[in-house]
Length: 269
DNA sequence: ATATGCACCTGTGTGC
DNA sequence: TGCACACAGGTGCATA
Image (cartoon, rainbow, N blue to C red; front, side, top):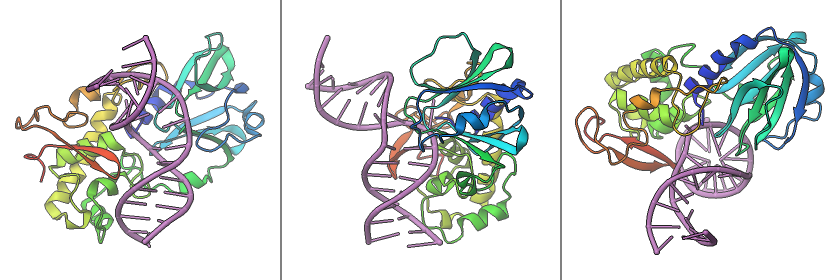
C-alpha cells in the first residue's frame, strides 16, 4: 500500500515517539515477508528510540546501543500509535509497549511487510535499494545515466527500487502523467526534454504528495489514524474511463508486468 | 547483466 | 445468499 509519501507521512506522525523507551514487546504472528527473528523481542526490550528515519519505503528506528529496527509495510501494512489498553485487532502482529502507556502497533493483513532488528544498519534489504529521490533530487544528467541502454518501459524502470527508492504504482503513474510520458515508452528512447520534464515531475509530485499527507485510497492512515488527501489530485491513477482533467480525453488502463498503468493518450506521448 | 512471470497473502468488489 | 473470479499501494526468486 504505502509508497514514499505515505511512509514519510507515517514517519512524521511518529516523531513524538523519539525519546520513548520500549518497555516490552509482544509478537503474535512471526510469519511476515521473512519470519521475525527469534531474538527480536529480547533485542528491542529496554531500548530507547533515538531517531526515526526513512529510506524509500523503509522506516528505520535508531535505538540506543547502536541497534536499528527496520520496518516495511508491504501492500497492506500499518503502524499505529495507540493506548496500551486499546483492544487488539485482527492482524495486529506486533506491539511495542512504550512508556507513558502508549503502544506502537504493526498490523498487516497480507503479511508482505517486514520487521527486523539489526546491529547498526547493515540490512541486506537496504543494500538493494537505490537513492531516495525526495532526500536527493535527481538531476537530468543522472536520469540520463539511469535510462542509458535500458530497453524496459520507463514505468518499470522507475518502479525498480534498486534504481530509485520509494516510487510505487500510484506515484509512477502520476509522475509520468505530469511529465507527459506514456508508461510504456522504452526508457532508453527518452530524449533530453522528456528527461527534463521527468526530473521536474518527480520533485513536484513527491513534494506535493508529502505536503498532503499521501494518498488514502481505501485504508491508508498515518500513525495517528489520519488520512492523506493527495488522492483528490490524482490525474490518472485508478481513473480508467474517466475524463482527463487536462484535455477531457478518456483515461486508459493497460497492464505492464502484471500491474495496472493509467495514462491519458493525448497528454502523454 | 537484463527483463519477465509468478508466488507470497487477505480482503473487497463484481457479476452470475 | 453464495460462489467464482479479478484485482489491490510490494518484493523476491526462478527462469529465459
